[in-house]
Image (cartoon, rainbow, N blue to C red; front, top):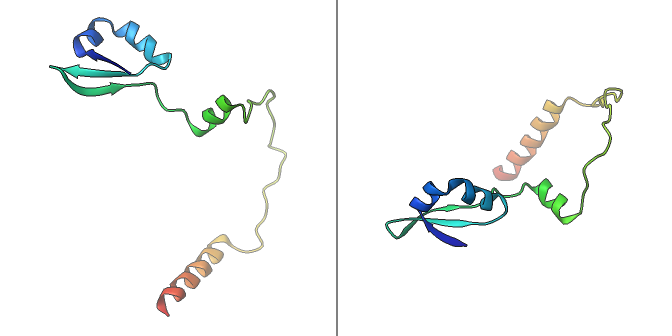
Length: 93
């Protein structure tokens, strides 16, 4: 991690931002005191998996419109209320 004064950031922002986009992190100082850290954004979990080679991007578009939605045997609200009742009963004992 490099430390640079805010004046250098102001005067060389294009170069510094290019370095940040390449993975470099900077501490920005003002009157000798660190006031900010400039770093590339964190990878999302999906981007981390891509970078690790654990997943790969799809190569074809798929049409999922032909898949019919599942029909629930019970109303989901009834199931939720039942679960809430069971939870509340545990704390009432």
